[in-house]
View: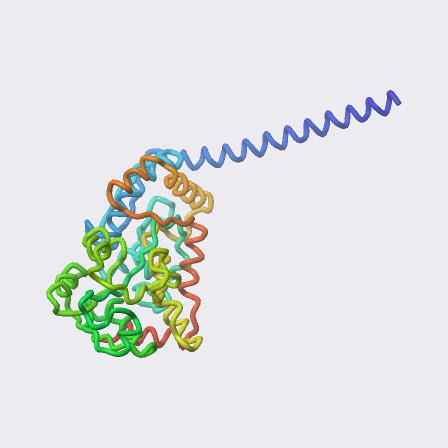
Length: 351
């Protein structure tokens, strides 16, 4: 009995030693990886490319992230913003895909329609959005179709019975092709009037009764004209999203409309941009451990009290999702049948 006990004790000691060695090796490997990432980023500068000019929503969210992301990345790199406007944000997407260093030092607040643009082939350089590594979403960006409170159309069903002059920022913009798609698929009577230089001018036109309706993002509307919603000065006709915003549960979500499978695919494709919103991605081919480090730094930033206070102070709404979830959102934008894709292309490319 004593010999058996001694052997058992010896076996136990050997197992404990093996476990300790294994844990030590695992800890060393984890430390080594973190140390390698910190060594790489130490003294580096990460650039966040923004495909639009200063002062807009993409730019503001890029600068919010730039102010806080670096301290959560091992090595604490500097983070700066570089504006690269052009082609509705597609120029920056092309640059990130084809030119920027593929080492984890180049990020972008990517154009929210990147999945649809990639599927349609409207980004120069054959950009495949699925190859970007998603880091995380700061906020969704629900676009609303709104009508002046005094207009004949007070809701989506009304827009099927009366003509609705609708301000658009130009051919090929969502404010042009979405109303036209709704006309053909849902029987609405939006009369698209192009030529307004941005949503600010479109809003002025609606205030002056040049048009009855327009499209604008919720965040932009609340920041620039909060009284419109607070005081009932506008009615929300529809929302460009696949799921309704919590504040507009009774308003039709475009991605839930349509009668046939093909129509639903078309509408879900154009509405999917809301799910990308204002998001950070990095280039293709970044080493997996650096992508992981960037994603976890993004998650940590979202818990940073100073970051949250800054977002509140700057009146920037947050509706975040992780990099892994964002990757799924971008990829799902591209999952559409060839026939539905060609029909959407015809609307987007129409003059």
